[in-house]
Image 1 (cartoon, helix red, strand yellow):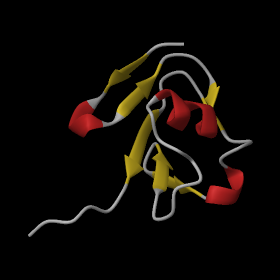
Image 2: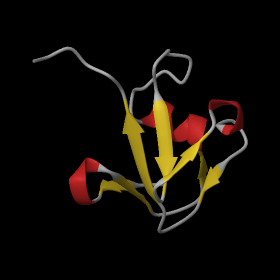
Image 3: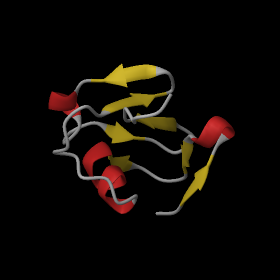
Image 4: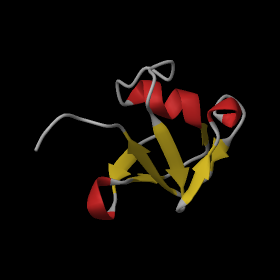
Length: 69
């Protein structure tokens, strides 16, 4: 599966993949606290990440807090 950045830094999914695998592919540990995932603008609950399959054409956004001012 290949992924390409979509608008606003989101990821456009080209073939089906489970959310946890998608996160790992991008170097993000799914066990990290304070992490949110949305698919097509709808938040996917953390408890569903291991079973939720993002489909071709979906836009996935990963949100993590960061320090700054």
